[in-house]
Length: 158
Image (cartoon, rainbow, N blue to C red; front, side, top):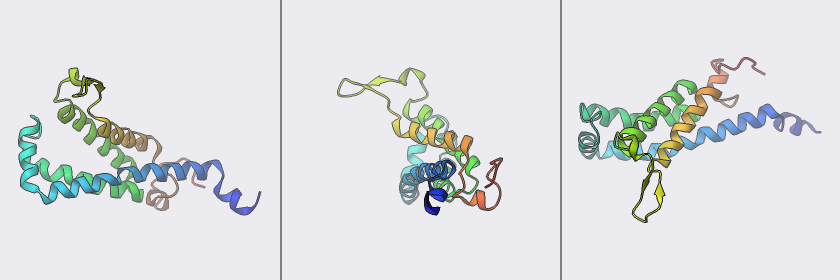
């Protein structure tokens, strides 16, 4: 086995590469967050009428949710505050799935769509929730700023 194979194909490196790929996934949220901020009045209106939680303070949620959709993916990709960012991402999308997609009703967990087939209306939310959940438990890996600054939480730093 040559030097490159020994350095880059060991289990730890492949695990860290997999975590880097996982951390790329939330980047798609940036576009959604930017669109919400650009149409701020529309976002406020949506927050005021979409569910009882955001209706309490629609202007506040119209700022916090898009900022979360922009800043959390950047922190996650950089591997900065990864476990905390993963927690906030998971909580944000847990709330999104329950209050927005399911309308606050667990009976809407599975429903029939307009084509007559069973549908989970929150596949996107589930994806981001599970990504955040995974990052809470794994951290960012070695290819991350958390690792560089010694905040990775990994018991062994190679």
